[in-house]
Amino acid sequence: MPWTILPGMAAGALLSFSRALGEFGAVAVVAGNIPFYTQTAAVYVLGEVEGGRRASAGAMSVVLVTVSFVLVLAVEAWQNRRMKNAV
Image 1 (spheres, rainbow, N blue to C red):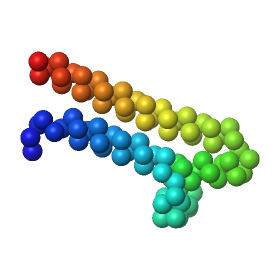
Image 2 (cartoon, rainbow, N blue to C red):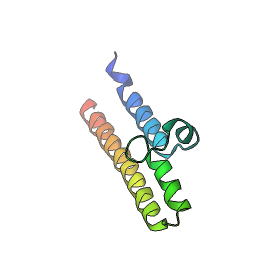
Image 3 (spheres, rainbow, N blue to C red):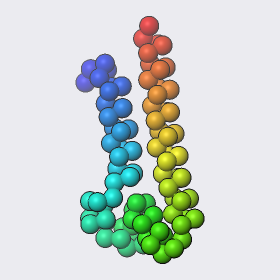
């Protein structure tokens, strides 16, 4: 595999992962929503909102945003370091 396409592949994988964190439609149908077994974060947030526990839903949402943001920053730093080393 040519190393020149690696940054693009990393960015695509990161965007796919970030999209999967927030995906709800297919996940709610496929996951099964069995707590601590097949429950996903998006389904958990929905259950917390429906149960009137908005604080815990908000906390999980902040965790998801933080994970996505940290991953974006990590890939950006990695790509910047690669570009500096290539020059």
